[in-house]
Structures are given as structure tokens and as C-alpha cells.
Image (cartoon, rainbow, N blue to C red):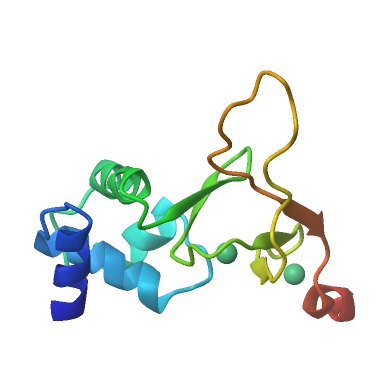
Length: 133
Ligand SMILES: [Zn+2]
Ligand SMILES: [Zn+2]
């Protein structure tokens, strides 16, 4: 917890117990959890925790560049790995795999001055689900 406390402080975030617990969950569960998954996992030990608090905390982490938000149209997932990488989403089991390629960035266009982020998400079926058919 001390490492997380320092990390949050270094990103100008006051390290409350809840914030540290949410960050630790993301750190220990690298499968890009949803707000619901975090809530289900932490609400037993943090009875006052609400989904709104988790959502606000994740937004705070995103704003302070601690976590990346992956927008999958119908829901959002959160990624603690901030080095550039793409994703593959299995549309059968919903698993989001990290793909070790740098998403195409900095398109050339006369009206663009600054590209902050790019997200590349492939969709398909993973091997595990293909074999299960
Ligand atoms: Zn799958
Ligand atoms: Zn990822």
C-alpha cells in the first residue's frame, strides 16, 4: 500500500483508502475490469463504496494519467498498463487481450495540432472460445 500511496501523491492525488484500494485492484487484475467488476470485488470489504465513487475515482486516475480508459461503445474498461498497446476483444467471452503493437498515432492533417491518444481495438473470437465450439 505504501508504494501506491507514493504513486498517487506523485500524481497529485490525495491517497484516500478507497482510492488506494481501487488502484490496487487494477494493479492486481490486469484483465481491464469494468466499474461493475471492481464494485463486485471491493464492496464486501468497503461497504460504503458506491459505483459512482468508483467511476469518479477512475475518471480522476484517467485525468492524472494513471489509468487508461478503453471505450467499447456499450461499456468502458480500465487499463493500468499505460505503455502504448492495442487490444483484441473476444466477442464471445468479452476478454480483452493486450496486443503488443503501437496504435497508429499522429495522423497528418492540416487542422490537427496535437494528438493526445489513439485506441485500436480488434474484435473477433479468441482461441479458447473457438476450441469450445
Ligand atoms: Zn473468448
Ligand atoms: Zn491493455
